Length: 118
Image (cartoon, rainbow, N blue to C red; front, side, top):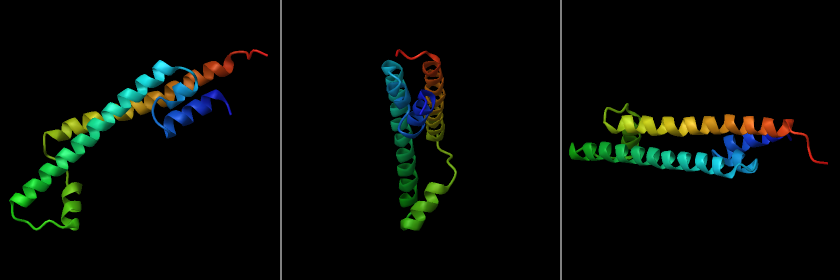
């Protein structure tokens, strides 16, 4: 398997930065990993915060909360201020993942073009 395919698949399927680490670009891979990890944590924090606020509003209204009510609350469009934070953190996570895949492919292509030391 070529370095380009190996790096691209590792960054796409394992975690952002894995392809760079496989291709021996450790600092670059670590940078992608840290950015993706932090934005992923912020994304999950925003989702949980938004869900808790909605559930608290529902309980404050005196509505009985069951599983179907929780699912309907979570699928409603957001009007809270945290939705901007949620969208921004997801955008950073997605862009980091995408740039990591493209960068790993480009690094692999450069390594594939180098003559091997035989």
